[in-house]
Length: 145
Image (tube, rainbow, N blue to C red):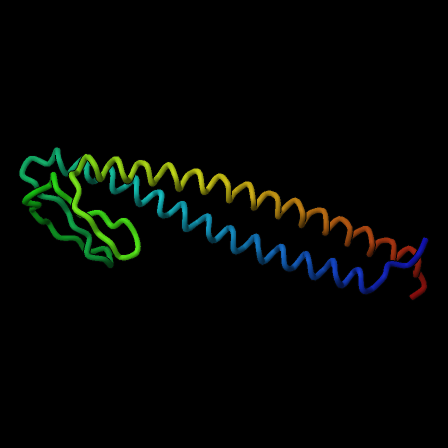
């Protein structure tokens, strides 16, 4: 058996590290997408409960665990951020529809990103197996070192 080429081992280790970093970035992106999807679904729930509030009073979170009771004068008309700093007025029903569509799109993006993560991890496993085999081969060919 030939001894493993140190340059090949170094190259494999480099690729393994690169794929590991890519997997971390993709996992972070997946968390962001999931958070956005959950926020959209929470907004849908809030809009639906707002229309059923008897006196129009709801809790408005201010941050830091602090909320205030506010009365919403017109719960059937809301403002929706559609991106690039643009906000448009919509009916509550239109906003719910928009948010549900957005949640479905985010879920589809999450699925694609999860598939990409799985492919990267499969490549990482393949490289790790090649590295392991090369290191074992190196140890077998040089037992006296």
